[in-house]
Image (cartoon, rainbow, N blue to C red; front, side, top):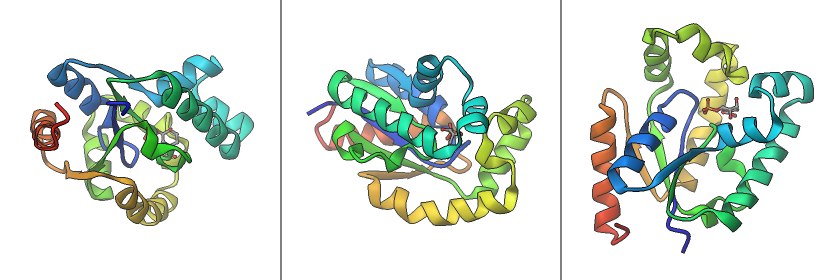
Length: 174
Ligand code: S3P
């Protein structure tokens, strides 16, 4: 048992923010797969996407997943929006899907003081129509991959963390 808690969900839903708060609340470290990838590649994800393309990015995600499976325990892991497609996800820990409507996600990002930067850094969020198709296609897959789904729309991070913590306690994982 790896004892990790893995947060999955669409771009901009708040996985990183939630992971950091959940880590504090459960006395764990938090790490983020996109951060690991950027430190490993020594470049920004959007640069790598532009230069090498998406399939190459997915291969690096799998390398990170393999490393996490071998090396990481007792940690809260936030993931990039497509990371859930790695072939060993279930072996990385308990999987929590953070759900919001796409409209809700885009509204939250749009209201952020650094909205431009948050959108610009995400290659798959550049074209709204494509993002909508991607959201629709992924929704059933996120749900199928998850041990727990939390609807985060309109909720404070502290509320989301309290729900995840209650579930972990109920399942004897804390
Ligand atoms: C991606 C989501 C991004 C990042 C990359 C691809 C995706 O992470 O991994 O741009 O496929 O949904 P965030 O979910 O943190 O934006």
